[in-house]
Length: 138
Image (cartoon, rainbow, N blue to C red; front, side, top):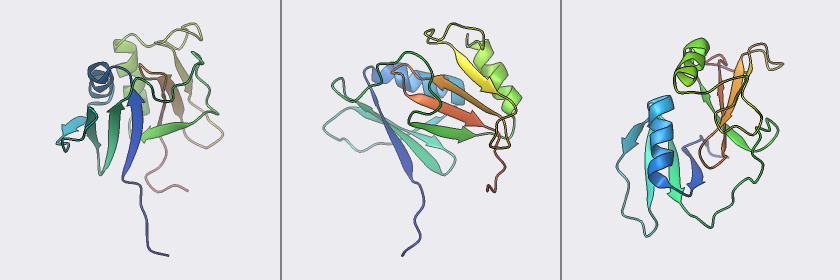
């Protein structure tokens, strides 16, 4: 089998500008050139990988307002987990927020995976993980 590697993750959004602002503000992702597809969207660079945001009001969205770490999600890895926690707090995200609060962040500094993890929801309730996994894992 030929080698394969992850190229991008695609997520749907009801408000493209709001979603782009979320990922650029919290994670400092760079907007990349995108071909003129028939449907609006944005490509954001994340190291060698990309996040593709597609505007699709009729797309598949989670109805649950709470963070469910067992639901589908994607993860960012960081070398400075606590700095990410601080950045989220500076943008109004709180560990003690109610489960249905869109600015709730679930932080597990001593996860069973062997590294710290946090979870939050983007504006369309896509679950985003940030972790402190080693560069080479497992």
